[in-house]
Length: 256
Image 1 (cartoon, rainbow, N blue to C red):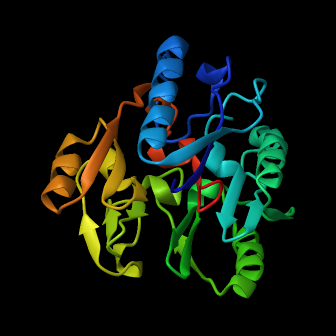
Image 2: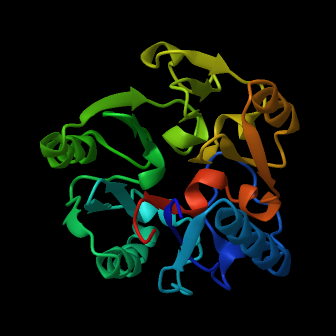
């Protein structure tokens, strides 16, 4: 096993989730449940032990569990989401990571931090400064991760919800970037992409890369580079600005 993949069942109120940079579209909850199950199956098929966090049915966005907790080594940083309506999501995530044996710390007000704004690449941690994460949240994150030997680099965001909506890292040390959304010069070895869904992927171990079905050109590009794309359809979550990264928290080596 690669480790544990922490996920959370979609809320029955999923269609009420927050949208910021796109127009609201109807969400098919039944289809979303099917897609979420397929997403979990893709994690399991790639060697991850799927663990469910306690459901938070009163929180429409709770399926996007990445925003509630950032895991670095044995430390789980419980976030203080930038959207006040999302803050009740954190307690269930805290319960889940403590059950997995992780120690916890919290981002405290006036700091705000969404996990979708945190991209870990080796010993460097990139933190997006945008609508959901503020400078104080980044300062607190920097202080919490410094004892773990991590350097936190702040990244100013443009018209995008989260940092990982604009850039993610591949296992070879390169970065998939949508240049119009984030300063590409802050990242080494950039691979620009043209599909928005192509700039957010999840390395699953080895050459396997989780990617949305809405980025077929990028999936082909990754295959040409020698990676093995694992394609999942998450159309109902994309209607809420969700992407493959925010539907899970991967804990390498945990639960193996």
